Length: 172
Image (cartoon, rainbow, N blue to C red; front, top):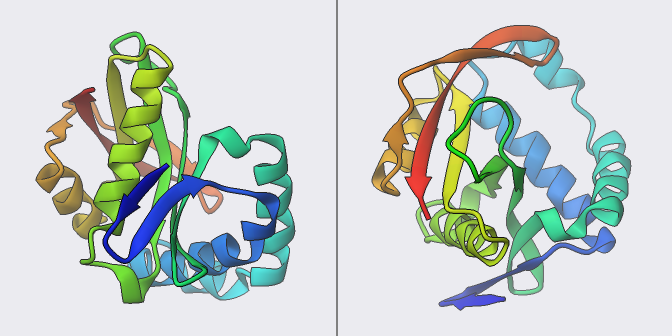
């Protein structure tokens, strides 16, 4: 799909489930350590997540992008139609996580661009990404990617509790 220096972006296949699950658990523990209760993060299990991700990818592989480097998945993005009130027609990146060792190598930006490319191919003209309000690393990243802050914050259930999320908008 997209080839960058050192990695490529492609659609996920069910066999990617274990690596996506590992990244998911590690990224949550790293990114949300101060935002989500420690006991919730400690209970996250890569084996359980592997089964969930493998099933999810089997059902909707066209909505899951992975970054692959040296034969391993080093990041992923989940995308689809925008939820809630948005400028129509819009796509949404529901999740975007990169392996800790691959941050600051352009993987996240390449996944965002690949998602936006997929939205354009589907005839969508706008994109949104929501993140936890307290996730300042993600907020800075989306701002550096050219996202415009959506003024209306909202609450989403994350880890079984309502947490404030903020969104970013792009014309794609």
